[in-house]
Image (cartoon, rainbow, N blue to C red):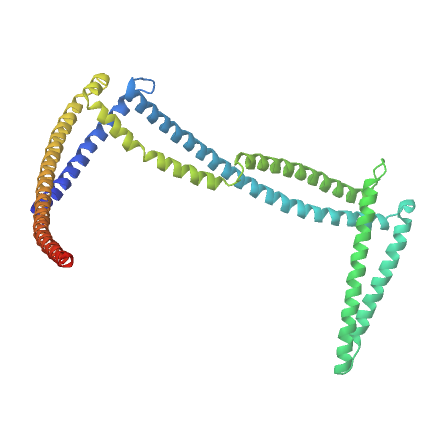
Length: 368
C-alpha cells in the first residue's frame, strides 16, 4: 500500500479532530453571544436571521411547555372529576335504592293507617291477597319441615320446598312492589294538608331522599358538563397523553437544533463583519476564543494543503503510470502494424508474380 495514503488518512483524522475543536469553540462563542443579547435587540443581515430563528424556536419550546403544563393540569382535573362522578353515581344508586325502600315503607304504613280508605281501599285488597298467598306458602314450608319419612320422602320434600320458596319470594317481591307503587302514587298526589303520625314521618323521609337525589343529580350533571368541556380541549384524538408525548418529542427535536444555530452565529461572529456587528456584545474572553479559533483554522488549512499535495502527487504518479501503459500499448500496436505492412508487401509481390504468369499463359493462347 502507498505510504502516502496512510499519511493522508492520518492527516484527515487530525483535521477532523481540529475541525471539531474549532466548532466547539465557535459554538460556545455563539451561545455566549445569544445569552448576552437582549430579547428586543436587532441586528442586520445573517446575524438577524439567526437570532430570529433562535427566538422562534425558543418561543415554540415555551408554548409547547405551557401547553404540556395545561394538559397535565387538565388531566389531573379530569381524573378528579372521574373520581367525583364515580362517587356521585354510587351515592345516587344507593339513594335510589333507599328511595324505593322509603316509598315501600310509606306504602306499607299508609295501608295500615286509618283514614285513607278512599285512596287505599283497592290496594288493601291486593295486599290481603298477597299476604294470604305468603301465609299459605309459609304454612306449607312449616308443614314440609315437620314431615318425616325415608330418602324418597326427603327428596320429594326438598323439591316441594324449593318450589314453595320460589313462589314465596315471588309473592314477597310483588308485595314490596305494591307497597312501593302505593307510596310513590300517594307522594305524587298527596293532599295539601300534611298527614300525621307514622305516615307523616314516612312522607318526610321520602321527601328528604328525593331532595337529596335531585341535588346529587344536579351536581352530577354539572360534573359531567365540566368533564365534557375538558375533553373538548384535548382535540380530535381525545388523548392528552398522546399530545403531551408528541409535544415532548418536538421539544427534544427543537433542542437539537440549537447547537447548529450557535455554530452558525459563532462562525459569523468570527468574521471581520461579524466582529463589527457584535462589537457591543463582545467581551474580553471572546478574544481568547477567537485566537484559539484562528490557531485551529490555521492548523486545519495546513492539513488540508498537505492532503491536497499528497493527493496531487498520488494522482500524478497514477497518471504517469497510465501514460506509460498507453505508450506501451502504442508500441505494441506499431509493431503489429509493421508486421502487417511486411505481410502486405509479400502478398503484393505474390500478386505481381501471379499476374506475370497469367500474361505468359495468355501469350501461349494467342500464338499461331
